[in-house]
Length: 220
Image (cartoon, rainbow, N blue to C red):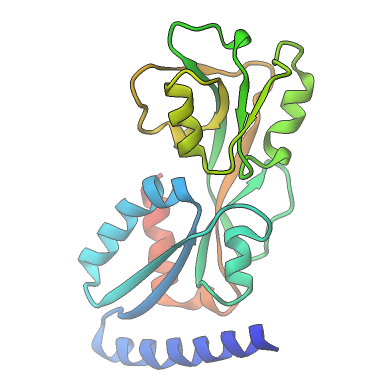
């Protein structure tokens, strides 16, 4: 009941705002966005910048939501966000009101000058097994040693740069590489994940949501 009430109140707010915007020929109000860390760092900023330039009265609130459990798509389903940038395994079922932005491959990352086979594997909770576990299970060279980091992929990359171990990391994480890191493509059908925008039946008609999705697609 709380979720339904939250969504009804939000739609009442959006309806009033967009009725006024239609009369004025503008887009205003508040757009609530849920995104995982690397999407918020590398996918959102160009789209938000262009949208802010075109519609200076539009306020965008970005919540960083780890892709653990319900994740960013869950924030939309619960009525906490209007649109989400979410990840899904390749070939998995996706929510009905969603669209693909990119397919992101994973890479092997290790300290430069060191043999990855002699290093422990660093992993973190957000690295969902559905993305990488099947690939891991096919490898015979991966070390038994593990370093479990209760943080995000940015911390994992920093630890690799410090020579602590090697990691299997998604492409967006590697957009800005620290010194001393070597990136190696994975052969043998490498793991991938789909990055998608997710919204709801009601929110997909919002002008602000549609404009954000348009800008996200334009940037890919």
